Length: 485
Ligand SMILES: Cc1cc2nc3c(=O)[nH]c(=O)nc-3n(C[C@H](O)[C@H](O)[C@H](O)COP(=O)(O)OP(=O)(O)OC[C@H]3O[C@@H](n4cnc5c(N)ncnc54)[C@H](O)[C@@H]3O)c2cc1C
Image (cartoon, rainbow, N blue to C red):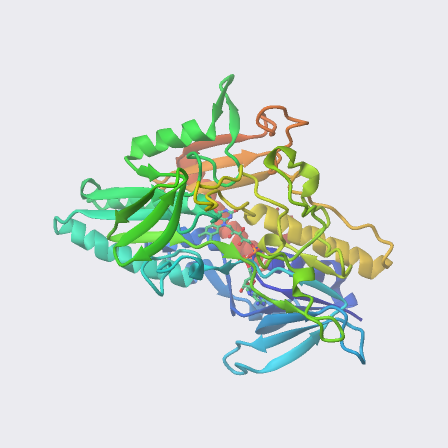
C-alpha cells in the first residue's frame, strides 16, 4: 500500500490529509507529522490577542480527528529528508524527532512513497535583535503568543484607565516581513478595544510597516472598481487610518528592539527611534530549516531548499528585474523539480519572488514585503496536491498533475477591524488573480470587476461565521468537504 507522509498539520497540510483520506480511503496509508498536538485557526489569534477569544476557542487536538479518519499521526518535528533513501533501500524517508510528551526526543525514520512538505513558516524572531515574546515585543502568530499579548494589553489598558498616556506600536518587525494584513487587523482590533474600554484618547496607536504605501499588504496594493469609478486600497486604507486616528510609519525596517525603544531605518536611509509601552511586531518568516541528504550521505539541502529555507518547487527561480516578473514564474503543480514524489504546499513552498515591487534603502537594506500566502491559497494548494497524489496512486505516474497557480487563482480575505456583534467591523477584500498579470489586465494587473474591498459590520459577521465554519471543516465533521478552502 502506498504511503503518503505529510509534514505539517496547519491549513495546507491538514487540508491535504483530509482530502487524501477521503479520496483514497484504505488504498493508501496517510501519516501526518506535526510538532504541535493542536490545530490552530490562526486568523482568529487576532481576537485572542485582544482578549475576546480564548486559546481553546481557536485550537483543538488533532489526534482524535486523525484516529476517527484513520490517518496516522506522529507528534514530532521533521528534521531531514532523504529523498533517495539509504544505500540499501532506495525508498525516500524522513528523520523525525518526537515532541509528543510520552516519547519526547525519540527519533524515527519514516519512509514514504509521496511526501508533502507543509511545514509553514519558522517565526524568525532572531532576524531582529530584541524582537519577540522572549525579548522585548509581543506576537500573535500562535495562540499562545496571542494570549501573552492580551495579558500585556490588559496591563496597558489598566494604566490608561489610571490616567497615564501610553504608546502602542503594532506592525512588522523587519524590512522583509510578510503578513501585513495580520498586523493591520491587530492594529484596528486594539484600537477598537481601547475605544470600547473608554481609554482611546490617552493612547497613541502607531502602525509600523515595511509597506511602501498603506494598503499594499504585500500584494502590491489593489485597484477596485467602485460605483463606476476606480479607487485603490491605498486611498481606502488611508481613509480608515484617518478616521480611526492611527498614525502610520511606512517604508520601515526594524533594526533592533530595546526595552521600550524600537530602532528603525526608513527607505531613504535615515535612522530613527520610537518609544513604546506596548509593541506587537510580527517576525519575518523563513522555512523551518530542514536538511536534505542524498543516499551517499551528501548534503543536498541547497538543491531542495531555497536560501530562505522554503522548498523549491516548479517555479522559475531565475533572478529577474521587477519589470520582467511574469505570472508564469509562479508554480502550478508544487512538485519538487529534482524528486517527483515530493511536493511543497502553503507557506512552505519557495515563491519565485515577491509580489510588491522590491525596494532597498541607500544602505542596501531590503525594505519591502515578502509575498503572503494566505489561508485560502494555502488550502486550495493543499487540496490540489492531495488530488494529484490520489490520481497518481490510483492511475500511476502517467496521471497528469493538477494545477493551482496563484497567478490563475483569486483570493478572498476578511481583515477584522474590531470585534463585536453590534459594533464590530471588517474589511472584506477579494482579488483576482493574486499574482498581477499586466498582459491580461493592463494597468493594475488584476480584473477590476473581481477585485473589491468593502468595510462594515457585515464583514465582521462573515469573519465570525468563517471562524466557526473552518473549525467545523477542520474537525472533519459531517459534509466538511463541501465547505470550500
Ligand atoms: C496572526 C495571523 C493572522 C492571519 N490571518 C489570516 C486571515 O485572516 N486570513 C488568511 O487567509 N490568512 C491569515 N493568516 C495567514 C494564514 O494563517 C496562513 O496562510 C496559513 O496558516 C498557512 O498555512 P500553512 O499550512 O502553510 O502553515 P501553518 O498553518 O503555519 O502550518 C504549518 C504546520 O507545520 C507544522 N510544522 C512546523 N515545523 C514542522 C516540522 N519541522 N515538521 C513537521 N511539521 C512542522 C506546524 O506545527 C503547523 O502544523 C494569518 C497569519 C497570522 C500569523
